[in-house]
Amino acid sequence: MNPLLADIPGVIPWIALPFFIGFSINLFPKLDRPLAVVVALSSLVYGAVQLLRPLPQTLELLGHFGVTLVIDSFSGALILTNGLVTLAVLLYCWQTGKSTFFYTQVVIIHGSVNAVFICADFISLYVALEVIGIAAFLLMTYPRSDRALWVGLRYLFVSNTAMLFYLVGALLVYQANHSFAFAGLGAAPPEAIALIILGLLTKGGVFISGLWLPLTHSESETPVSALLSGVVIKAGIFPLVRCALIVPEVGEILALLGMGTALLGVGYAIWETDTKRLLALSTVSQVGFMLAAPPVAGFYALTHGCSKAALFLIAGNLPSRQFAQLAQLPIPNVLRGGMAIAALSIAGLPGLGGFPAKALAMKDLLPWQATVLNIAAVGTAIAMAKFILIPFQPTPAPQPSRGLLLALVLLVGAIFAANGLGPDAYTAANGLKALGIIALGGLLYYFVVQRWSLNLPRVGERLEHLIGMMTLMLTALFWMVVT
Image (tube, rainbow, N blue to C red):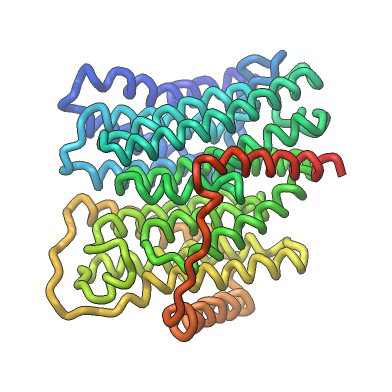
């Protein structure tokens, strides 16, 4: 059977559903929340089916231009992540009085992220990423405060600049291959490769070109932060990983950058005193693991997305954002439990989804690469220990909302369920290593980090320096591609 005819009945209605509902939701404002939930559930089910599907599906929209959609287990894991995180955010916001406009943007950004996860060409990817940028800006600025507007405009400026670099690179790829397909990157000129990688690195919050991320994710509203770190940031990582799997030379460059961002992000996170900034910096670090191990990136994104979304939702409901103050304040036990599970999953505790993801990511690395990421894993354990080891206060604490509880049940359940997707990771050596890393991280936090304070410079996060950082990255990428 013609793959095009076989795939149209499933792919086209599913990819069109979020946009159809998103643009018509204002006609039925009383149904905004249920309609948004329908969209999230459709992605959750569709992603789960594709994750377990043995063979990929391909749909050529414009074969002459290489405009193609590809759905496989890799994209299935990311679509499933999008469904879970979006559904959790919707449950959290159910009784918060958000307007129809808010739910419209959530649905549109959800559909655009799904589109990115099935794109296999640079031009349709460009369109999807631009829609994500606009919808993300509208969500960031939803409170309409001066601070929110500044954070949103800052993000929009950096995002649009990055996509300008990317678009020039995409056109150079077409000029060289007469196709926009990802596979054409291998035969593209060095400047095209450098420009495309730079644009996606910036969108994905990777290394010094992604230093816009900590402020943006930490200063957005709680549900928006969860959505950004849980799934939106993966929209920049996915095409990089897909290109790395297609063009090995690109994979070598991305692996090096992945290790650099893993160390940079966790190095800052260890000494961070603000809960939401620490989580944002941790996201910068964790995307490095995905770039270093492309074959496992989808699974890693699933476990990280659920864990990080849970932590952001909890952090937004703690009595303070400062760890020093949290040590003196009561925290509801249910939040402590959810926080511990999500943090331990990111640290790689056996029995939780983060363990097989980390173990499989380390499996096929070169020895020196594994050493670098093991160091980053210890740093991750130190950073997560800040959440796990917050002192207990016997004073009664106000109970969290029902929406937050439902969101945590969904995300924590997904963290446990994801553990079953990586049975091959469960060996005695991997288990002992993971426990050793977590124990070492906890000890280093308790005896060293907790007793010292270190204020690392944030000069690279300033708006006037962000474009300069991108220029430095472009120069370095061009040199790496040429050599």
